[in-house]
Length: 390
Image (cartoon, rainbow, N blue to C red; front, side, top):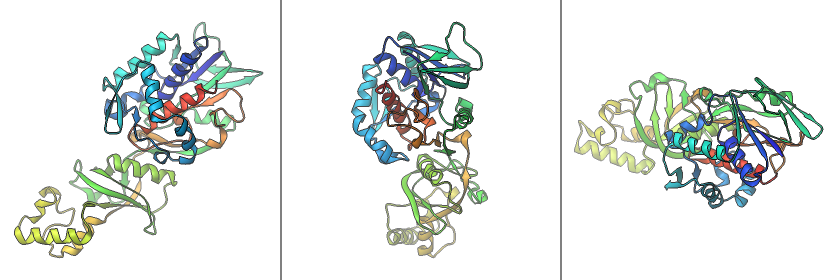
């Protein structure tokens, strides 16, 4: 059996290794348009590579019904054991699972060495231009034919990623080819990205400031579409931080509804009445610097402190600080692509419904998860699904 894998990112590497482990007699060749493998992996987990999430559940993804059956078969324990069986040791911080080296570059090096030791071949700097099904074979057309490589394969695995972080190789270049082969795509959008707001001038002087908050995504009618608590990072043009990334992904999954807003509850631990009481009491004790109990002096004016004596109004502002969404900061600053190949195009095995022998793994599919190792979990999970179908 001869297998071609397109893309040497997470799902491509995992797929090649998993298949070669199960079928040592198979010839597995990985084609990668970049000059080195795993470029996007280097940036994951702030350079530490958050591999898995111990609490992974279907609700952490955009299509929970699609993921549910897979996660019942490939549990976290199963996924972790798979890595352990490959010689990959891990350590856990809360629910976040990292390689024992705590280093993304070291982890990529380990995957590369493991693949090489198994006899997997890599063709770097080679882009897939097209492919053709001819009988039971799949013929590849590439940008530069590698020496001594037969471009006729029995199986083709498309693991080319999405469009997020193009400087690291995920540039969506496979999408036109998929359209040429009559596949349906869900419009790709930049997920897990900072949010731009309509009036960034209101954030002047806040850049770099961080504060815990409950962040709610509101429709134009004020309906709560999604909410989550976490640390918000203020930027010149908008808001960032893991909690904002997750909210932004939901915003994109909903096709960026017009006039959506972010509402920040800056003190979710207090009720409205409790917060108003704390503000009033602090003012009574320290009238000239009562705001210091809540915020650094340099940001107090933004949040309505100053000569304010209406503590009910101030509490309302702090419990519902709103920003009209202009959009996200784009694919250049996003971590995952929302959208991609429609799930209706694949069987449960992730094999194409229209082209026998063609499979899809990872981010190229319309599957995206929240921050916290969920997208790399899907990369491994999808690779194992394909492995077990061969």
